[in-house]
Amino acid sequence: MPDHPRSLVIVGAGGHGRELLDVVEAVNTVDSQLRYVFLGFLDDGSADPDPVARRGAPLLGGLDLLGRLDADYLIGISDAAGRLRVDRYASVHGRRPATLVHPRANLGGDVRLGPGTVICALASITTNVRTGRHVVVNVGASVAHDCRIGDYVTIAPGARISGGVAVGAQAWIGAQANIVARRSVGDGAVVGAGAVVTDDIRAAQVVAGVPARPIDAAPDRPRLPGDRAGLPPGQRDAPTPR
Ligand SMILES: CC(C)(COP(=O)(O)OP(=O)(O)OC[C@H]1O[C@@H](n2cnc3c(N)ncnc32)[C@H](O)[C@@H]1OP(=O)(O)O)[C@@H](O)C(=O)NCCC(=O)NCCS
Image: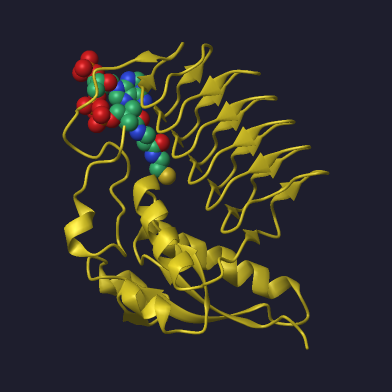
């Protein structure tokens, strides 16, 4: 019995979730056989319904529906802690994450992507790379040879990760940031947009600038695109773990 098409939902109907729909649609244009039947978004109410409607996609209901639908899922939440929570919920309910590579991304040899990882258009991953669960390599970002990318990491558009870099779980690499070869970025660290990382970054550290240095980041407000659409209201304002 063929494995496709699979039913699919995206948890989170904010900007990131709708970008993931682009990837799903692009993947569906490649195979002669449809790979995914997109059922709609799951969102606990924070998403703006207008852009969702303009995608022609239904808002099906809250995260709790995931346990009842016979569908694979993607997590359309930028925030790493939010992604972790949805992944745990989905795992408890036996749901299977989809792992997607946009047809206009480049993947080299011996690249292993963890469940739920999404590689967006024009991203490039060269060789002998491993990613963890629910990693996002966003539009035009690149990851070079021998990198190890931890669970729930986001690599924002245009970021460049050089060879042999280790990025810890839940780290967030900002748009157009550069990390030079063989450095490590600790768990939950944040690298600001446009930074050039020349030293190892400690866990939970927030760095920015060229060369990147720790910054006096606001401790009490989410410093990442606060895209927690999809999470139940009580969890939307929880601070990102540091
Ligand atoms: C680094 C970052 C996380 C800090 O956010 P924050 O905690 O809200 O920090 P603030 O905006 O309060 O800035 C704190 C200080 O750092 C500076 N700063 C912030 N981001 C910076 C950056 N990327 N490069 C250089 N300096 C930066 C600010 O100018 C400010 O300096 P000051 O104290 O001299 O005034 C954020 O600015 C950033 O770069 N996020 C990545 C965004 C991104 O890539 N989005 C992609 C979306 S797909």
